[in-house]
Length: 66
Image 1: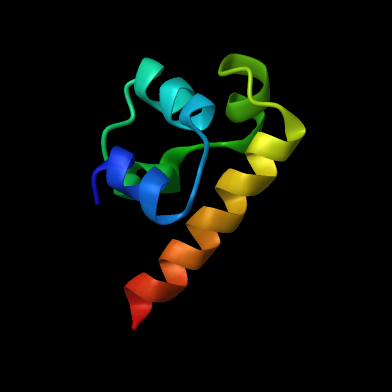
Image 2: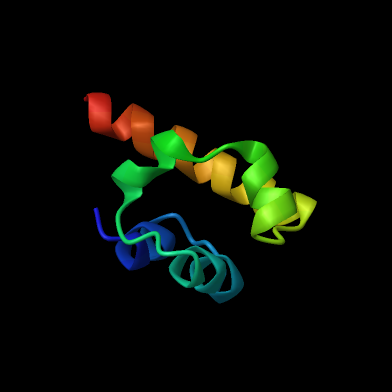
């Protein structure tokens, strides 16, 4: 799923989308390679943004298995 669609479907902020795009993330399948420390330390995610993204990824992975 393209990252823009992922952010829309899971109601993630434009700020989160911007940080993901800035760092070259183009597709949701790339999330399996992201470390939480990278979100905070390298990409500048705030705690709430990290929580929102983690929640979205969990929801997406459950939907993907169905």
